[in-house]
Image (tube, rainbow, N blue to C red; front, top):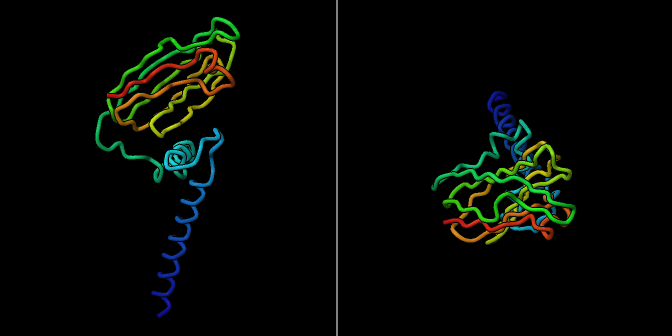
Length: 164
Ligand SMILES: [Cu+2]
């Protein structure tokens, strides 16, 4: 009699723990100040994937479509003249990653972000000598990639990502 009861308790404890874990994942993150909505929730899940404990539950399946990785570098011509090495990028629909390298001789921190068609996700902001990347599952359409630091987008750190 006691054995099945204990077993049931153990299972319900496990279920409760999983629920709490799931709730924590959804609640934390959000430092980038994105608007709410489904894309916001997935942003948070991806950002917390660095927690070892959550890696198994937050790994998104790639699903249909391919995956592509695009590379750009930050370009600094002056305090108010910034940019990326490319103004246009193209990718096939599916999982798209943009990796932005912030060169070791740069002066400012930079990051890479993608926005458009209901998605908006920021990669990390990194100091010179490091790379920032952002990964999103994208449908065909036009998106903007930009640097989320200060007014860098206004000073030229943006471009068009076309997904076909
Ligand atoms: Cu920047």
